Image (cartoon, rainbow, N blue to C red; front, side, top):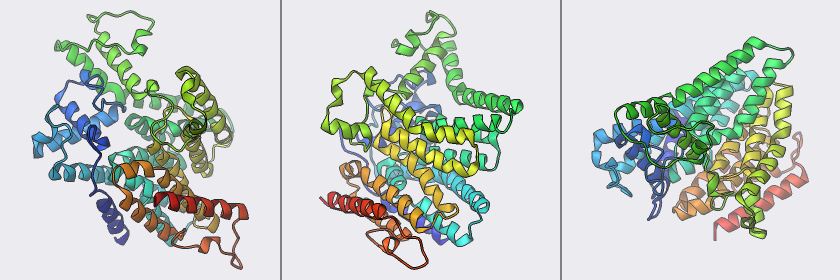
Length: 468
């Protein structure tokens, strides 16, 4: 009960800040606008409508989620979601409603998934209740997740919760359910692709190791295809229905549609669903936006600071990022495919997500939430609260939250940043609240001198720069 109260109170405190600056108003306005357009426009227009003002660029489950929340919100106050007229609105009651939708979504998906995962993983790893409880609070109070979803404003915990549910299903050897949950994560936010190579390698390895299991392979393939079909089915059906009603499709055609091997005119019944499908894919994977956005702490942004990468063409940068990403995730994918054991899953997921975050194309600063998830889940495993594990997991989380500081500072979330990160550091006994992890004690394994120097150096730089 105390843990639940602490978690919910922390989220409420972070959520009282402002939500972006004009003229675009930030992600609060983006999420509100998607609710607005999904409840007022026909499905065939969702991915086409006014792309210069927070055009919809997430997969269909996010669109359906926005539609549901928009319908509920309109019952309270229709003016919150009046088409076009409501842009930039930030009335107090709207803020309460929008913040409540994040909390409710999190409590329906993320928190149950984490609790169920932790119970199973702790039981598999023979972890006592006290250690599991500490790990649970640490996971639910992750600084970066709270600051982004409840401060900056997004619904990342829905996607992260589905990834956790897929991981728990893998550990429980419910592979078909794992496919359903992971497709759900991909259908909500495309960033779940950071985990896809490891999930694919594990599933494939489990079908061939130690022997070929053709039935399992066919079952996994069929369920995955069916799940994707169900995710896109309302979108496609809506386009067909709008076409039947005589609602014209937008004139713009995405490059993917133009490259189709068949030629269609707008009188064909295939035209509307194929155009909408191609447009949604075009919006979900925006290669035209560039290599990275804002001040993301990855390899390309660091290189660009010293050597301007803008002199290279987009296609060259795409190929370079693809090669770098493949190289960075190759070892964990080969390992988990060759040895598909549940105890290796979190390590492989963390390695893959870090590889994508550091090396892939079109990375947002908020994508750091993905590698931090499996990394933090390691706290609930065997030795998860040891000095070495706490030091590295804590270091990753504090550093990950710090990489978000330019975004948080811009949205006046500096105070919540310091409060949440310091509370989390205190919970795990991390600097600057405690230095016990780095002290030599008899009977306990000491941290390597390189680890101490690296951590202390980064903590010092983090604190100094954040205070400027």
